[in-house]
Length: 103
Image 1 (spheres, rainbow, N blue to C red):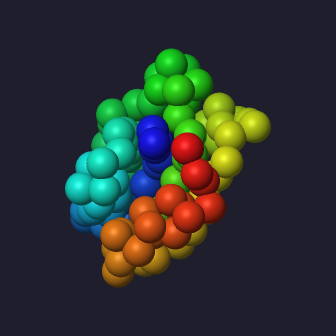
Image 2 (tube, rainbow, N blue to C red):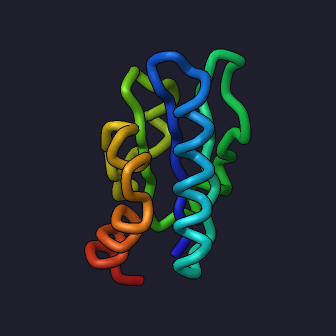
């Protein structure tokens, strides 16, 4: 499965990047491809391209603040969760997505 996503926390510092790494690691450990865009205090990093999004099977948006560019994901299955959910148990998040999106 190909997973893309965005992380953004209220401070835009630590949790934004920690959660991006946790999701990435959990997805890759489960055998999936994953690319996560971070929207932190220094702006968007690791920006998702139109090609990344087109190839994705699912979009994860883990955030506590509004994220920009949500219109890019129109028509894609999207998991919209508080950043704390991905922080606490990223493996469970990926397992839940696997059950719902069989590809």
